[in-house]
Amino acid sequence: MEAVSESIADTISELKLSAKHYAPEPTKLSKDGINCTRCGNSGWVPVEKENGTVAMAYCPDCWERRQIARRLKQSGISPQDYERYTLDSFDEKRSPVAGKMKALAVQYLHEHKPGGPGFGLFGKSGMGKTHICIAVCQELTKHFHEPHYYFSYRAEVPKLVKASRSYSTDYDAAMHKWKTCQNLYIDDLFKFSGKVQEGKLVDIDREELKVVFDLINARYLNHLTTLFSSEYMVKDMTDIDEALGSRIYEMVNPYAVLVKGQNQRLAGLRR
Image (cartoon, rainbow, N blue to C red; front, side, top):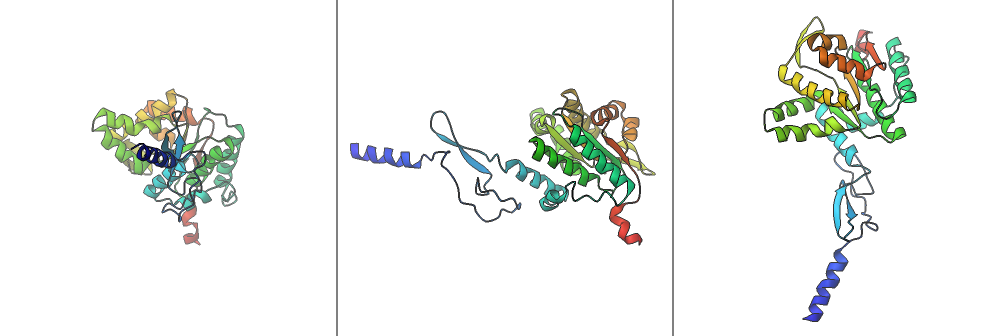
C-alpha cells in the first residue's frame, strides 16, 4: 500500500509542470493568423501560484492581439490589413488633407503622455481616417507599451444595446472593458445609427445614444485616452446632444481634423 502511495505521489509530482520551464512547441498557424511560440498558438500559458500549483492564464504576448483580430473580423477588417495600417504605409502626398492627417498623427505621438487627450478624424468617407487611427494605436502599443482596444461601432454597439435591455449585471460586464481600458479607438462612430439629411447627421437612435453617452462619459470622467473616427462632424453630434458632443470635443482637442475632399478609394474610378 505504501509503495502504491509513493507511486501515485511520484506521478502527481511529474504532472505538476513548472510554469518557468513550460515551453510548448509552436503548433500550426492559427485561424486568426497570429503565430506565438510562447503559448503554441493556444492563447494560454501556465502560471505557477505561490502554493506551487499551476493555473492557466492569458498569454501576455498574444492574447490581446487575438481579441483585436476577432473584433476586426467582425468589422470587416482583416488582421493582415490591420498590421499594414502604419504611418509609413500611409501616402500623405495623395491629397492635402492626407498630409494634414499624417502630420497631426506624428505630432500627437511626439507629444503623447499617458492619460492625455485623444485623437479624432471626422468627415468624408474613404480618406484614410481608419488607417491613420489604427496606425496611431499601433504606435501607442509598440513605442509607449500602452495596450489599446479596437471598438468597431457597428459590431459592438448592437450587442451593448441588447445587453442594456437585459439585466444590469450583463450590461455592466459588457461595458467594463470599454469603459476602463487605457486606450480605446472607436471606429465609425454613429455609422448607420440615425437619420441623415444632405450628409448631415440630424438624429440618433435613442437606445444607441444612451449607450454611447454612458461609454464616453465614463471615459471622459476618468481621463482615459479615446480615439475617434466618424463620417460626421462633432458639431452635428453636439446639435443632437450637447453634453455628448462637448465631451467628445474636449477629449480630442487639440488633436482633431475635419476631413474634406474626394473619396480616395474611388479616385481610380474617376480617371
